[in-house]
Length: 283
Image (cartoon, rainbow, N blue to C red; front, side):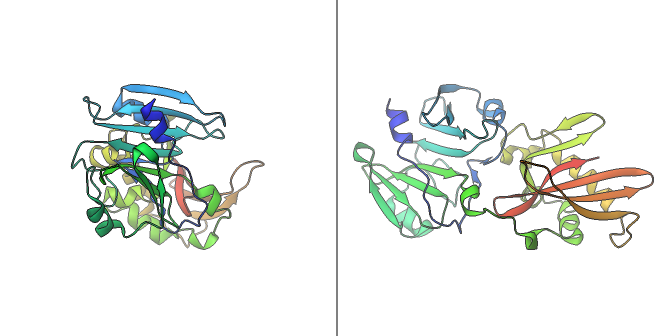
């Protein structure tokens, strides 16, 4: 019961998110639900809340000193809506703004600044809330970092697409042509799907593992796309054009179409987390 009670202390705030963080311990909001199962393997608890949201808790360390909870929203049970890391293992790197479990309040403040609000969590310590951000911290009764939670609040704070943020051909082609897979990952939707030879490719592992190992082959496929783009003249309408795709009940998408040597390729952008990310690639 202690795990569930601790986790329920974290709830979304209603502030406008200016500091929107998508990654925690290598996992990214919006990745598919099977990603934690593929990487962490051991589910120690799973259930659903009264509002239809579901959660799964995974062991990170076999001795139970670190675990993670992933929540899935009732409107999309297939992708990660929130991520929480909780534990007692001192100096465990959280993959979040330089924080490590067991840090003192002074160490946390040196990295994060003062919390905007501190809520009393009873036997579990305090909850630190930061205005204009999508994360909160759990501080144990003895004043040490015990947990971090990030939430996908993008629907609340980015209610309308900003067409000024659509990357132009030069911007996205230069990033895709770089050898920096971290940089490339930042313009890819966490749930990206790449279609090639009647197969669909997507991220199977945490984003950090994918960046380091490319186990799902997505970065190899984006490199293949970049090689195609290097031969395209975006000013030639016979080779390149951009338009929008609208469907009832679905998000408006921005589509770049490439026609080269009799072949047709497509890049689909979707507005996520306050920016346009590559949602689909057709090779």
